[in-house]
Length: 286
Image (cartoon, rainbow, N blue to C red; front, top):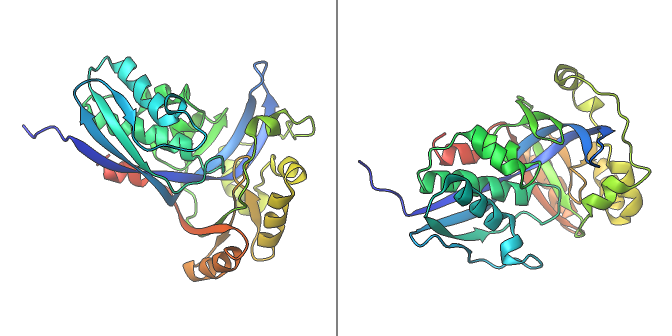
């Protein structure tokens, strides 16, 4: 029988919302969404060390986030409690994804914790179970657990795997943070887009995709509006989530790199490839 691994290092990829429609508001205040999630090859990296004493410890400090409030710690403790294991872990993170950027970094970190510790602790839980545990941590966690680009409805938790095109993206972070609750509470936010089917969304393609949060975000955050308008001069640009990050698709890496180099003179910018399967799946042999 193979020895139990004591260490593990895994990626936590980013996502883009290729489209985001808000089709209603629920009585609990949350919004009904329709969105296309696409995984991209920008990553944080999490390293896990097995502990026998049951302690959950994040050894990397993160500005503005208390240790026990961090989604990494909360995900580990939730899995520990749900499984009843007496094992623990020390976790470190190599952080690349901007916090509050709309790239899903915190949710992806939580998903990598759930999947990584499921293996490190040899719990044998299914992805469906892990996704259910993750949903309590954030609506975007399940898509990272399942590890596929997906059509999502509800608050983003009702997922259907989708095969999307895989262009090269320029992703720009304008250097500010966006308050997601403030955007969703804005009285001028579009909340009545007509629901569409997944088939129609995919058949309509990029030309019909939009982000219903974009007008509100541009009004509240002129720096994001400036970056969106600048990027739109090179290719159709769009906000991801509630921002602050925005993106545009290009057919070649070279074309994307040229625009990213120009963008980096004013903001932080990356070139990333669209993916349909998360590299976390490959890293874990799923």
